[in-house]
Length: 610
Image 1: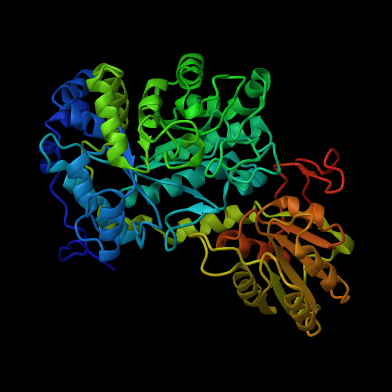
Image 2 (image 1 turned 135 degrees about the vertical axis):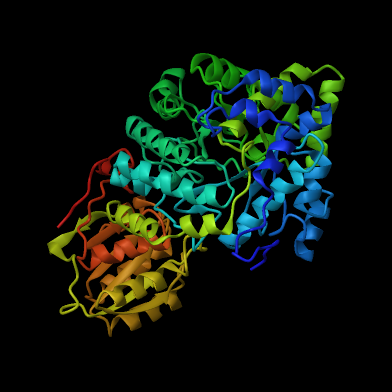
């Protein structure tokens, strides 16, 4: 583990509170009446005074939230130095801040920002120190995508919770609020103060390739309630939640990372289907809202993505919905926002549309200079920049960053992955596991009758919430519950030889558990299940992502949905299979028939128990 520096008590060396206050030009005193920034009335006049002392270059920098490679602010590994030089033209996070004065940094696993909690805390402190020690230095807003479920940038030993669709299956606002409070507390302890969660998209399209189980479900009002509860939990922990992706990415068959989706909802459909969760988030006091790189002709017929649409971001979000918090773009490196305009035009058009934070442009130098030039040529006014900077600084002030931007190893140890948090995640996961089929009361399995289990199936790439492939985690969990379970990974597209190997292994088992992943009409996973069924052994299927798999496997006698293949959900499914807990989840989306999608096979609210 890298430590930037530690004292004898094991806490990260951190500047004194007095140093932070001095570095922020005394603005804290104006904000922190009564001892904490959050308790104080926000004094816009003091923040405007801060803005008035900034150079134009510093103002432009405040609008950007940028990726940067490395586990350390000042001494990244050589491979990360090389990546930074190639993509950004700097060597380290500290150099990025010094050169561009960015207002925010986003952490990614693949950028090597999130090795372990102490390292993350050290990196956060190093970033804050690098910024606060500059002339007119400001605290940095550090963010990440910690949705939980299949999208989590901070892995174990942090507490990992079920994802949104699982929470939707549990249907508990209390659980959603608890999840947000605990997840927020852990992020806060590591210096991450803005989380790009929750997903407020209503997943009304089963073919949606990018949202799916990241959504709470298909019912707008149910999604709205859970979004508001999660927002309340996060923000009670001093972390700004971010509802995404406005105006709603739930009904698309195109992934905006790679293409430009078009949403064909009418204005009336948008009001009824897509808007309620965002309205609920705003009513709950959400600090930030993320835009979607999608076209919604009913809201803006110009052909522009919502991220660059003034009618959508200013006309609807600001003026109609009355939102005056921070608007952040989705990543500007995604194809959905780059299809129509060049990388130099996108940030300027986003600001003209009403955006405040420009997230992760593919080339920061091009984007930063484009905004600078737009102000110097009069396309953008400095007053327009000041509006956005004021919103960003308000959020930083609300989070207490002007008062104390630093964290400690002791704070990490008291919050991250502590026993009571892990227990809470397990209990919530148990309330989300959904039993869709249980012919003849096959489940729960008993070790006395089905002592030897074979666990086969898909082992998709592991997100941060996993210790290994789901077949292995499931087998280990079942073995711990009194069975003798053997794992055999057959992949997401098993070959005939792999299927034959699984069938041979099944001969020695009393029952077979199959992990399924995104089964389609042509998937060879269907052949795997069919041939395992032909052995005469009892077969239990667990959909480790989309519950829609059940429509393609009509002959499976027992079928569970876990909504993700992260450890917390897979282990909960094992406890349900073993009868240690009863399944309580209810489908938050309808499952349509595979042979006739106009017909519903299992409606919203379906879920068996025992």
